[in-house]
Amino acid sequence: MRHRIGGRQLGRPTDQRLALYRNLITDILRYEKINTTEAKAKEVQAQVEKLITKAKRGDLHSRRQCLAAVSDPTIVEKLFTLIGPRYADRAGGYTRITKLGPRLGDAAPMAVIELV
Image 1 (cartoon, rainbow, N blue to C red):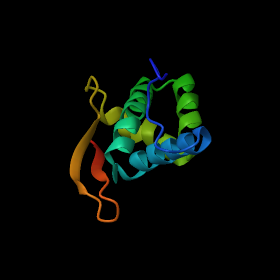
Image 2: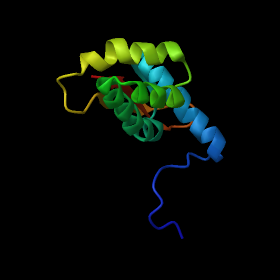
Image 3: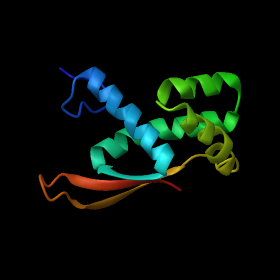
């Protein structure tokens, strides 16, 4: 039984799924807009928003937590110098998911996740 077990498995083992999330988070913060499947976008959205909230705080502990979640230190620097101050007056809702049509190869529902 899977009662009270949250999150999506995305058909991957745990280590591959966590690496996928880490790469998606890094790419969203690098390019500020990526195309992916709806399930991946919905799963990563909360993690990205939590990182931006930590970047708004701006202390050393938050920076180290972001370094643990993002694979590129230059992206963490961008997060704390550009993205965090940009949303200083905003109380959440830093990302937007826009649904696209189905993917041609396998008809997977696609979406764009972007920073607002």
